[in-house]
Every structure is written in C-alpha cells, then in structure tokens.
Length: 220
Ligand SMILES: *Cc1c(COP(=O)(O)O)cnc(C)c1O
Image (cartoon, rainbow, N blue to C red; front, side, top):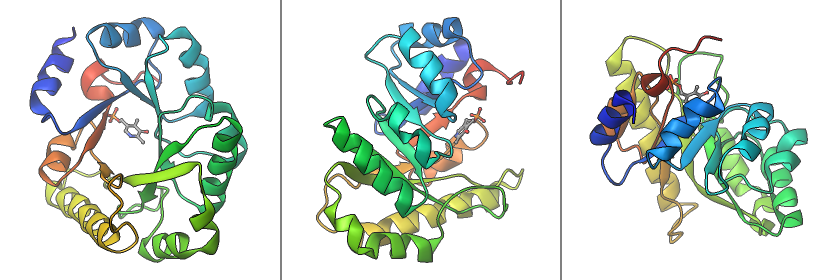
C-alpha cells in the first residue's frame, strides 16, 4: 500500500468515507489502491469513468464527482454508485429517467455553491429551495437525494475554507430539518480534497474526495 494512503487512512475517522479520486491515473495505479482494500473511486469526467469502469473489478463503487451533462447520464446510469454533482432539476429528472430504465434507484448529492470563485458549479441557497419545492420532484421514484456536496475556494486562507465548509454544514442542517425531516437517508456531506480534507472533517464532512495526496501531483 502506498505510504500516502496509509497515512490518510489513519487520519480519516471511521464515520467518514474516503473516495479516492482517480482522474488521470492509470489502471495499474488504481489497482494498487484497490488491492489495499479501497472500493470507492471518483472520476470527474464521464468519458474517463466509462473507459476505466470495465477494466476494474465489478465491486468498485464508482462516484461521479464532476459536472454532469444531461445527455451523458444514460452512460453511467447502469452502474454509478453516487452522483455528487447534481446542480439542476433538469439533470435530476434525467437521472431519474435513466435510473428507471435500469430498474435502479440512484443516490445523488446536490452540489452547493460555497466558494467565492465564479468557476465552481453548484446551486445557491435560493436555487436549492426552488429545486426542492418544485412539483416534479415529489414524483421521482428512482433518485434519492442523500446529501450535499461542496468545494471550498482554492486558497491558502484556511479560515476562509473552514467558514465555507461550516456554511455547507449549516445548509445541510437546515435542509435536514425542513425538506428532509424524517428522511433517514439524508446523511451525507461530501466535502474535503487533498488540500483541505482535515478542515472538512473537523467541520462535519462525511465523504472526502482525495486524489493528489494519495497519488502525487497530476501530470496532465
Ligand atoms: C480532482 C477532484 C478532487 C480531488 O482533488 P485533489 O486535490 O487531487 O485531491 C475532488 N473533487 C473533485 C470534484 C475533483 O474534480
């Protein structure tokens, strides 16, 4: 097992799930991690996910963590384990459609915009409320919203990062008490990457998505 992975596994509490982010990594690199017992892998692009999925063992849990275009949902719907990046009602409706065709219920996280940067995808507070209040959402039988995902601003300012993660946790608690009251499955907060996962865990993350800190810098 890579010493980076060993170290990270000791830093992550038992109630926090590690998703190993495999974008740009070779099958051989991924297999080393798989053989150490990790089953959860994340890709940010559908194409790359599709090229790797058949080459890895069938018990891998594949997480889609990057922006998802509606027209690509059909390719991942047969097997995807968790979609972290739902950022519109239109996308959620299409995931439901494709999940139904595959006779599955697909777990999804709503991606919440918490960073100061304009580059990040995600929903703001008003958009989340409008999505969850919409009439069409109550009829969705084949998707389950199990929590939220967010990315902090890319900055050295750890206090800012902490406050952004704290904001996501606050939004989670508000939604849990309102739209998801009594919904036992609404439990997940996917936050924290290589540079900020320790802060994220302190602020209540339940899923961290880590690539670089395990494999080293990406070359492309
Ligand atoms: C690449 C990526 C990560 C992991 O980033 P690292 O800095 O390599 O740990 C996490 N989440 C998303 C959405 C990503 O695209």
